[in-house]
Length: 307
Image 1 (cartoon, one colour):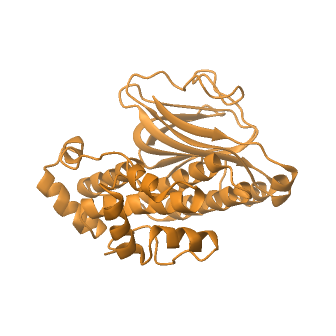
Image 2 (cartoon, rainbow, N blue to C red):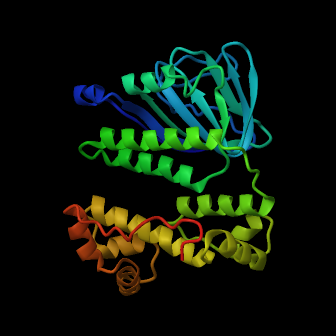
């Protein structure tokens, strides 16, 4: 079981804002793992048999694997990769992955009158707690960004998190109301690869082994990846590492050498060269401008077909 999460305390100012994010994180239950993990605070832990009741909303996205969700009326729902479970305050519920598959989940919890208003307007209801939105690296990246902001503890972080939460909510509402287009097997595998690359960008990714986990040959993987994403996998990894480098330059005082090493560039000279070519300014220039609110608008996450 791999996990990464943060539980947050709200100030009076956060409460006045109308949305208070209470928790954000992710966890991976491997096949056969006990579920849930035992390190969550009291009030969040539960036994899948007895279930639980929360005093907040939670939006839980399943990026891999499958399992089940049970609501207060005893209805069972099949949960699979690309499903979102909506937890409502004061509503009994239970969920868990299949022992044979496990699952990868991302979650964010919050409460406040803004969310109450959205729910009372009928955009989401306890009668329809499991939605299908499809496998999406973009949605995963929102959860990952929320966890980064929560861990940084920056001033105004709650308001930043509230914005990410609304983005997640908007994505879920839009995707769930769009006629489902089932991804073909190859495209589904490429989306899985994108998620893996973004999560492991600051590790030594072995591109020769990644296709093996997807049961593809390297040549087929590279050809399909470039066709779907618009760039070869090696370039996509570099873009993911540059995004992380920009985040570190903006939000930490780490040296350029440290950032270069942390993002797995072979040397600080190579890092400076690639950074200047891609971003249009040196790492130190980028740090100064981003902290002054002049972040280069050309630095955007790579989207499908972006070259």
